[in-house]
Amino acid sequence: MKTTINISILTIAIGGLIWLLTACSAAPAETPIVTVSIEPQKYMLEQITGDKVDIRTLIANGANPENYDPSLTHIMNLRKSIGFLRMGNIGFEAALLDKIRQEDPELPIFNTSEGVVPVTGTHSHSHSHGGVHHEEIDPHTWTSVKNAKIIVRNMLDAMVKIDPSNEDYYRRNYDRFAQRLDSLDRDFESRLASHAGEHFMVWHPSLSYFARDYGLEQITAGNAENKESSLTMLRKTIDHADSHSASIFFYQKDLDSRQAEVLSDQLGLRKVSINPLSYDWEAEMCAITDAITAD
Image 1 (spheres, one colour):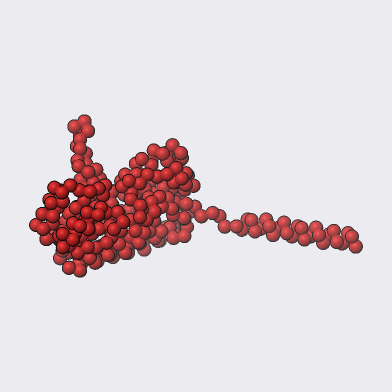
Image 2 (spheres, rainbow, N blue to C red):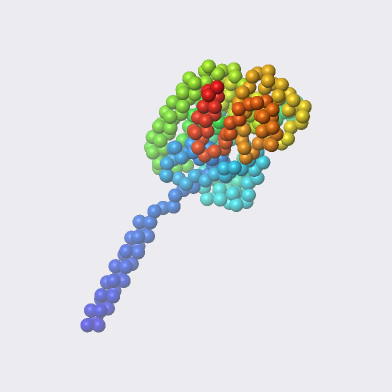
């Protein structure tokens, strides 16, 4: 009797061990992490990767990338990533790259704006070093459907390199999203064709690439740092807007200087709130186009 009980206990124990080993072996692997700089990148990358990776963003919605200073926590979190897809020309990225390479020199880093023809002269005065003339590149490459086509192609290439096991899946998703971007671009071109040459005003020069794409002119009321402008500069801006019949003022309510609202009221412009750093990149681009074509 005692032997029978012992055998039963042993059988149960072995069965439990087998179940435990099977459960452990069947446990899902942890989803790999890919880090990007801003929320619009996350939106674009998710169209390609679906649920294959966990996409983390360095800058949360509402933060200002112009004066953002990554914390040690952000840098340490990057070490958990299988890759860092930077936007390309945002100021904090350059400072961050040196720190990343010190902490994790093996981390794959990709410039998703590589191949985009840059706009210069919108974010600082041109300057010279050693007789060589330099102009700072406008970092807002993502506020353009045409640029987005280049950006998502770079994202695809990056994901194929760091996660080749899912290459076919990524390529299928990319093809669908690329077709969507082509459709958006054709729609915007058709709707904005009759508005070519028109001027609109912004406080922060965030729509330079969008303006270039469709033959529009961006009048910058403030500056890249969102600081208060001198009365002389404001007067010049008012005269410029008046002489070019600008009718829309695009503003970022959480970031722009308080002078932005005063200026738009004085000019009698129609104010349109935008958020170029919004996760819902496509909705933002459509809202900007809708505002211009509403006149």
